[in-house]
Image (cartoon, one colour):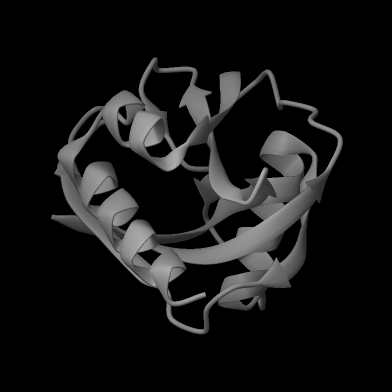
Length: 138
């Protein structure tokens, strides 16, 4: 089984003292977080931040946690069965939304509970639960 590692940002902002998260709808139709593979000699946060900018036009205003949240799943949607691990970093973000149409068909800012229900996969819902727990501490 192949193994892939990628990195992403959980994009957050405060609206009326409440956290909102930005979710993307990938071209395959599922809702999740922006993420992607690192380029050569690129660090974890660098890769996560670059993917956020490429996919959404957003950039990190400040990192909210030193701890990455990991998402694990197995898929075979694009060929051989692949075990995937994604490391997500929480960040407050800013910028003007510009969705990368080649990979992203839609995106939405949502309150945390609404985001939980929109997320497609159980692994992403687990990540969202972790996000909510970490934000209580911030």
